[in-house]
Figure 1 (cartoon, rainbow, N blue to C red):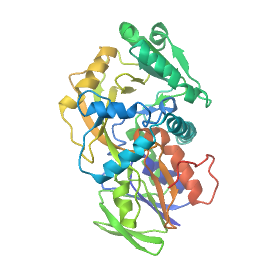
Figure 2: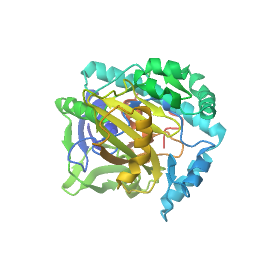
Figure 3: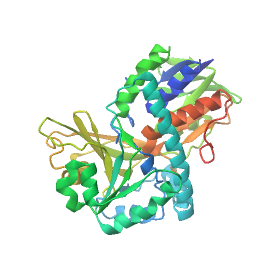
Figure 4: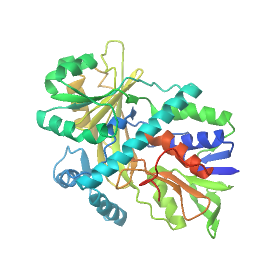
Length: 413
């Protein structure tokens, strides 16, 4: 049985691994010259069930509206004539009720917890190295009002079994000594002791090596153009270097999935949301944080990877534009300096932007389609690193005729 996977990001690579371990012959195709070169390349690095809230919430419409007139908003909307953005936006707004927000967050949480367990099992069994840091993540609040709202919102997670702790500024400084000097800027924090961090790009590269040892073929630097198909079956993927035949096919192209799926008649509710990251060198005299976390008021995430410190921020609805300017990083760097003034070399930033494949409800799209041998593993949004191993295992279970360990309600096409 030959399976062709479209996409060599973290989702495509993890899918390839689990399929190969199940005994299948696997080929992975991607336009990039190496694995994990787009959304997975320089993401936040947080494996964070403790931050699995859906973006579609009662407060989201107000934030998006303000972003039309004010800079510095965590969510930014840039209006354009793309009908797909408007259609996606209407679905997003329908998910912004309190009831749907709670339901969607609960579904995401269960998937994230399951996926983290699969990630930990895979890391242990294969001995993967990716600058992993265990021991929890901090979710900081700058003022009492937002802290109180955060503590109230976290009940949807704690009510569903996730261990969370509320910390005072002094307790935050004990957990993260590098925040001692800036604790006067913090009203409090929520600490999730089971969350962790690691470099998704390094993980994908290390797992690629394991995949190749299992016989997986990577056809990289190859543009995917369409399909050869008849009836309800796909026969081959068409590329700029010829066609690739297979017995079944998996679409794992992130934000680009709906563009290719449309060639088979599907309208996937996945839309790109641009995020920005900056990676800074850490030298011996710096005092970087010992654990990752999120500045909730500024929605700036941070994580340390060995001698690098990364900050990520912003969710911008700007179509498929991946360009950036130094000014796009001013807000996150100011927030970073406030918290960790000696954390890294702020004079030597490496900038990056990528597209997060968002669904209106926040959960990915998995499983079967109307074509009997065409499957989906896409739409992971900003949680692809957290969700990748879980969704890949679930998909492989479906493809092999097994019952997944997780309820698929809200995750299938």
